[in-house]
Amino acid sequence: MITFDKLTYPESGDVIGYEDGRFVVPDHPVVPFIEGDGTGVDITPQMIKVVDAAVNRAFNGARNIAWFEVFAGEKAKAMYGEYLPKDTVNAIKHFRVAIKGPLSTPVGGGIRSLNVALRKELDLYQCLRPCRYLAGVPSPVVHPERMQVVIFRENTEDVYAGIEWAKDTPEARKMIGFLKDEYKVIVRPDSGIGVKPMSETGSKRLVRAAIKYAIKHGLPSVTLMHKGNIMKFTEGSFKAWGYEVAAAEFAGETVTEDEVNKKLGGKVPDGKLVIKDRIADNMFQQILLRPEEYSVVATPNLNGDYISDACAAQVGGLGVAPGGNVGDGVSLFEAIHGTAPKYAGQDKVNPTSLILSAALMLEYMEWDEAGDAIKKALERTIQGKVVTYDLARQMHGVTPVSCSAFAEAVIGNL
Ligand code: NAP
Image 1 (spheres, protein in one colour):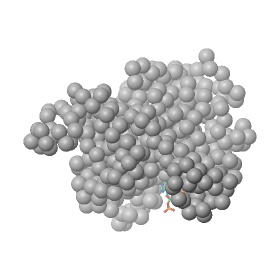
Image 2 (cartoon, helix red, strand yellow; image 1 turned 90 degrees about the horizontal axis):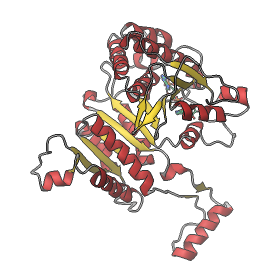
Image 3 (cartoon, protein in one colour; image 1 turned 90 degrees about the vertical axis):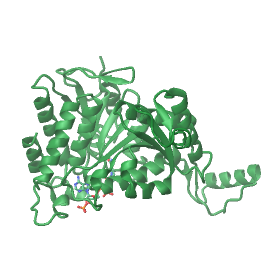
Image 4 (cartoon, helix red, strand yellow; image 1 turned 60 degrees about the vertical axis):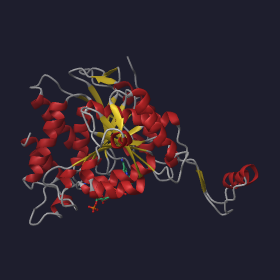
């Protein structure tokens, strides 16, 4: 059995397994959680209360989660002297499904971001962002309910790989010299240099995951969002590799949009998943004007960063959007907003993003009954105008409730 430097896991729980691409979840799984910095102290305990109540209600007490606190960020620094201890990474790897509150990026700690470090350490290559409307949430668009999109953003490559050098450093100068001498490419000498690697392996595994998700959930299309008209051998290759995966591995289940239009008279054969692609800038207007035509979107890292937040805004913003980072056999679900430090400890902020992330986690555990119950209870609560300050200020004549009072109301609505 696994041992840790400073942690003791709950013996009342069992380890989640992984077979044939699916989690095998016992009735009493151990689920590690990171409370998070700043307002993590407010939202994480509320998320746990709501999940416990939903699981208990959905399975009549036959199932429950053995929560296991692991540490990252400020709490870890105090306990271990470092922000991301090995114990934490090992616990998440071992127990496979975990959830975290937001983490602040340490200043001057030599770490770009704890979130990025966790994704890299655990090879969580899919950043999953479902954007669905919860009735009652204030939205800037007239028909937010038309958006039913799940974004699969590649999490490990592209400009986010962090391969870059500042202007005037020996590395930047060397790269500029190399480009000139070897390839006759002239780059201004006062340039910073960044590298955008995108591999066939990384792109194909992401698109594969998106297609499998769409098939499993009976969804109508997967859209490959790219900027391949300009960056042909990175973004353009992403598109090409995406179509290749669909043709090589899912030929029986998929059809391309081109085939539908040119060979099938515009009619999608029953039960087939349509694979299509859109150039990134066009995708931004499509998702505003015709959101109902999009279902699953698979995209490289930077496009995914932008489109995820744009879609979240249409259904009410980051405070109500869930997220998950998923790899093969390990996944870490998280609130997508930051630590909102100015509100820390005030029992004020909205716990919905983290609660919805927990519902997504329950879906991945195939405990859908509990996840669905949470989504419905959230909707009932918000429709009843019981909301935290962030939503209240967008609704007329509504008095905000605290973070914990909101969670209590959600539990009451389960
Ligand atoms: P932020 O923490 O997301 O906060 C920005 C603003 O968003 C807040 O001031 C607040 O708006 C609103 N907000 C955030 N969470 C909310 C919630 N739960 N309920 C209601 N409103 C909420 O972004 P930031 O200030 O840019 O970043 C702060 C720290 O968080 C940084 O250290 C950053 O690195 C980190 N961060 C972590 C993650 C992560 O762990 N995944 C993600 C992003 C940022 P109002 O002021 O208008 O009320």
